[in-house]
Image 1 (cartoon, rainbow, N blue to C red):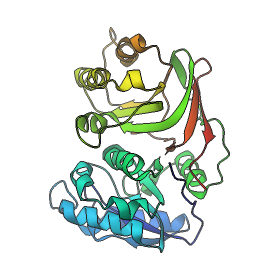
Image 2: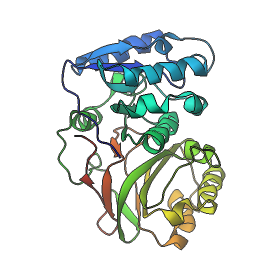
Image 3: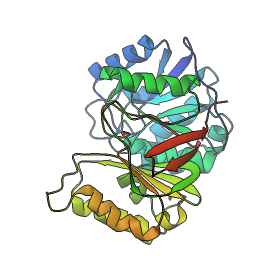
Image 4: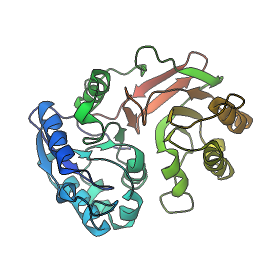
Length: 306
């Protein structure tokens, strides 16, 4: 896995919409949020798509824009405008060689999970699972903004990743494990099973999160990963936020996860506040990390910034 350069104030960052569109009002606020953080913003044409369904333009256009932003030497990092749906469509259209030869910071989450996996597995580029411009940064809290800032500027010290105050990360299944951090949104990871972009969990720490899914759907997707060998091949699992995933008093979400994961005997952490939640922890996917479920800790041992 390559390392990427951090960014500093006055650097140019690219803003692109590889999945769904955002309103022009939110686009203006997103640009302002990035400028307020000290960056100059190169806005992609996909960001100007509005009221054309659930996609920010044809897949060919979205893929070409993302490939072009990686090859553009002026652009030092790429931020996704928002998630939604559509990133898996562009995977076979991306220029792998062009991207691989121009590694740089890439930030997003949710539907962007497909691109995280592509960049890590096909291009050997680490990425940041973190807030997106239009859906998060326009009204982000200080914890979320400061956590992302430390990661992208490269001045984060190696060590324990901390939840927001008052939120405890807990060990669900005891043990310690280390490996490269990978993963993201459960629906996207499940959707890519059986494709050339299927997640590789061998020797890795697998992070998962989701939003607004029924218990039986979570069960189905987790069981799919289990049957596909993803938990047996992983060194350990980190469970993030599960906002809007409702359970009744007789069977909570921890019961489901423990039932599925316990047979594998791998350490599992629960309630890392990363994913569809606020405040949000930004994660360096591709970093070498260690989990200590007994202490409820996730520790960065080797980061992704040069």
